[in-house]
Length: 156
Image (tube, rainbow, N blue to C red):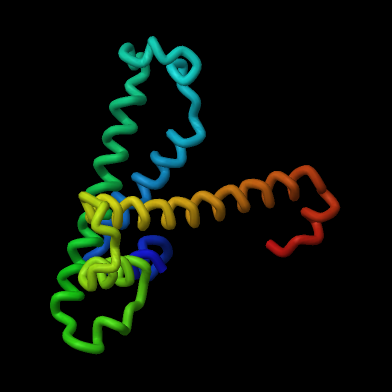
């Protein structure tokens, strides 16, 4: 839906396996850091110490996600350059729409770095979808484990 890629499941394309591994790891790390509280959240003056190396890990996760988003954006721009005329209106995913909007000048002229804007919009959509599904599954399992009668009635 966001980039037209499938990185989970058994039918991941062979050419995408390396990127799929990087993507899965980056999303897991992103969600870990999102839910993890650090000492310097409460004591900001201690941030420069970075005892556990979390600040460095967060920067590495950001670099991985930026690399993935830039790769996707470059692929979609190349695909849009190959299309002519009405073919560009046959958009398939969110990045196609954003690239088309950029090519037709529909973004505000106040936006200085359009690539960063597109990557941020796509990443926001992606993380929102992944995180909400993961949270839903955690709650379903927690509620089932707390209710043995329903757990016995649920299918395997």
